Image (tube, rainbow, N blue to C red; front, top):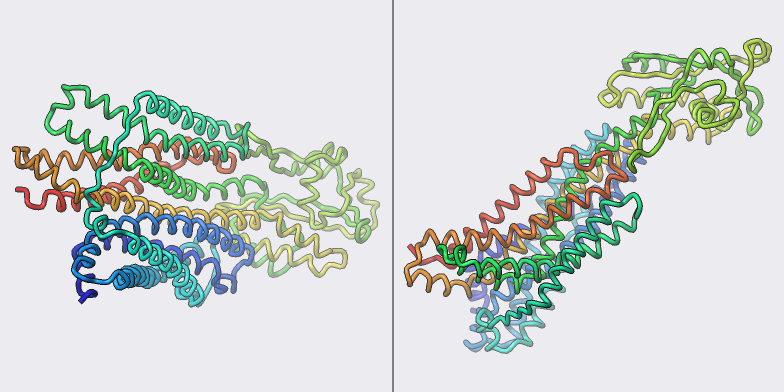
Length: 612
């Protein structure tokens, strides 16, 4: 009988459970997807190991961040659901149910909801893992076969993690319920809220909030001088400033609007302002958390989408697209698949072995070929490159040009000596040649270029004077290797930022939704009284939309401002973190708007149910 009553209670609040369920399912799905991409060994079979070893750690970071936000989400939303069902549990106790039975009931309910959400979320995660892995593999230009989204260890880790969280939540719910008095359970929604407003203190707090936010934004803007300290300063001051702003500044603004008789006496403005004044007093913490999570979520998507610009920097950092150390039939066959727009070469003679190797080059050829390299410098705190020419003077002084030429040669540890044309001819050693290629559409033809570079390096492996360390240096310094390395990191962060942002958004929006709906029962009487004294239904609906819209808009606006200033810090690693800003902002605001409309619809059905 008790279970039947419980199921009836859950059914009566099916909308609330549906919102909680959707958030938990999304969290479980993304957690499973990150876990699969991080620990599935199928990613390392037949692929470039370094690419997915780096991507793996990127998704491990995502798992840690998602675990933290999921814990916060479960704590908040579970407490809201429990508060809404306290009246039901109080009635069960009045009907004669034992406290121990009610405790077992709430324990089982919490675990059941968590288990179902985890299983359904994992099923959704299998599909996400399959989709994202294909997108990631295609973006990295790799060939991986026989990879499927289902991976048992990832599924087990997901189930264990979420069930552990819900087990702890169930224990807390049972403890909180058993310790509560029946009268408190029955009248949970009728407790008066003591609104304290001290004008002097609130004014000081409002000024302090603005000052702290300003300091945080200043720290983010001046990341060049403060370096990593700007992140810590911004984190502390923005968190504190956000709390003080919601706790004081907005309350002061509402009080000033209420004193404006022309505005307050129009329609139901006075009622709406009174509701907001009441809400902000009780919602300070939740609005602060939602605002900060909004900034983190929007920032994660924005930065993630712009991480792909790092590949442009990788292409700018190295001048020549391919360096061929030795021609062979395999190299020449692969060369036909690459569209070459310019070729330069350098003849040289190698003398000595081991640490005493010397590369002799002719001064006239160095002056004639005008080989290029990319000079690194910083411009406005960002990495920048300029093209310079290797001259005979560079080699004599052994400066940057000399070092760049050394890295282009097949023996980077050898010493380079510049000699005249006559001296070069008199050196008794076999003449060798290195070709430097510039190709068309490096990004589009990357797979063919990478294959050519690997073949070009392999041709010198069997040489008697080639050391394994030289081969490693040649591979790692090639443009294709650097592009591959950066692309793997950028793609990992791009996908992680996008899905983490979506998970954060779903959790913060549903958390705010729960908080608003949890007060609907106590607001119902107020709206009924307004209807009885003649307030039009359209006015009541407008009051609902304005009230809830304000509660959704305030953290969103402050979160957007946080993001706009916070992106300044990422100028130290991204060329333009504000690039394509409209894409994540539009996506985010559309989803956020849908949550707002859903909250308004559900709230109206609760408080205006019998109004016509």
